[in-house]
Image 1 (cartoon, one colour):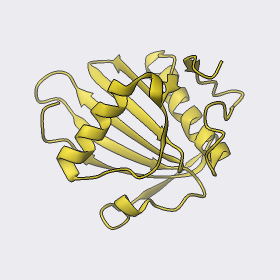
Image 2 (cartoon, rainbow, N blue to C red):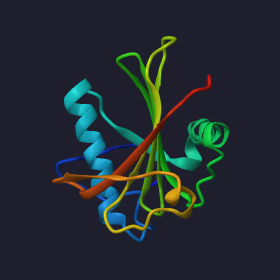
Image 3 (spheres, rainbow, N blue to C red):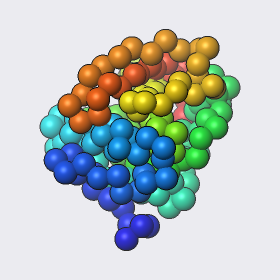
Image 4 (cartoon, one colour):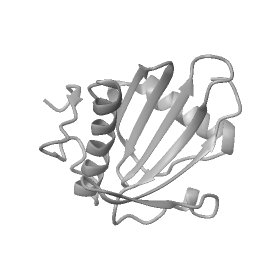
Length: 157
């Protein structure tokens, strides 16, 4: 079961795949919150895989962070997903620390392209992001208080 892709259930929130995180419950809520958004907005089933099963997704996100802002995430990546909706190439990495990083990459030239960070309820702001981003708070029924930030991608990936 562990290496199977998992369609995230946002009705019965599960920590499956995230058990090693010190904020597993909050991270599961954050993941479920994203899943609900994509289901409601795009009828997309948000399906995650262990990071080791989709190294190309992790590499793409890691490269964008490094080349755009010289950011290297210290935490261990647990899960990833990548998909296309509505002309956007999306990728997510969920880290053991409770951090979620997503890349929204518009496929057309001139389309929106950004990297988003979300922090699970109860985690500290990671050192590598702390002095560089202001995090806005947002309440979620599934995830408690999520803190989020983002930056615009300037390069081509």
